[in-house]
Image 1 (cartoon, rainbow, N blue to C red):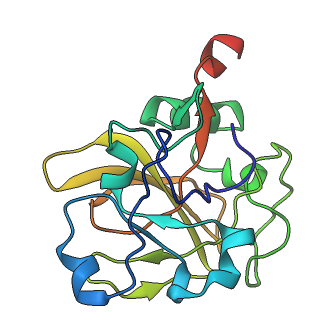
Image 2 (cartoon, rainbow, N blue to C red; image 1 turned 135 degrees about the vertical axis):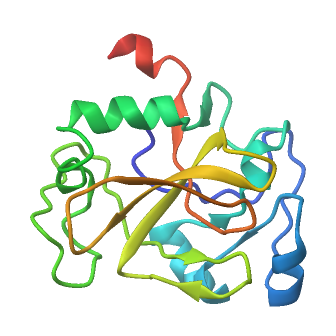
Length: 181
């Protein structure tokens, strides 16, 4: 697993991923795009970029060669390895960067999950310092895809479907990681 959130502005083939700051434009997208939290590039080095799901599903690929966007199966394996959904976040969350209280985080996994917040499908930002949602590459239906999330106040790694227009963080995984673990 990558130990930081994706912070890439180009697809693997070199094509640019559109940087969309306009709220109305973001809300109407059905193609790949990214933004920084609150349109502030100073958040990029620590939290990475927020991508809509369409950017992650683009066949040009968003992760480096030999890597892929984490699937639900990848997340299930990672969460199981660190105690299951009820407690895994305590081992996946970074020990700093979260607003207090950051319940019992030890980052024993080295995953270093940070509270990057999100950009909702309506273009509004929320959750910086409070929640760390991550897209999976797994599609729920034509409008939604599956995401994993952690927040500062508990140790659960949640799973839910979200609107594909939401802007969330992304983690890449080496293609052979499941066979190595």
